[in-house]
Length: 71
Image 1 (cartoon, rainbow, N blue to C red):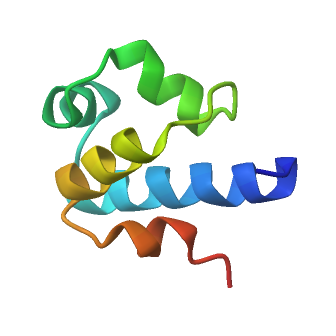
Image 2 (cartoon, rainbow, N blue to C red; image 1 turned 60 degrees about the horizontal axis):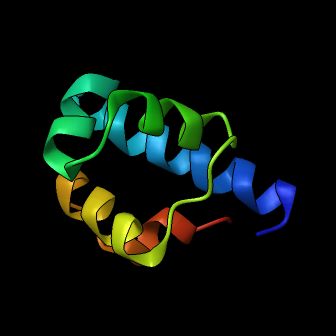
């Protein structure tokens, strides 16, 4: 992922997380990962693998493709 796309992806994760009213802790519980990992994704410090992308999307109740909607 280019840095610009990483920022857009991270912004989408944060946007959908906030729309659901979840804090990072709640999202990490639902996605089955560490709290710090969600923070690192949102700060573009970590790039999630495909399996984690689907877990995050499921936790946020959005199609995974929506996390990549960069328009």
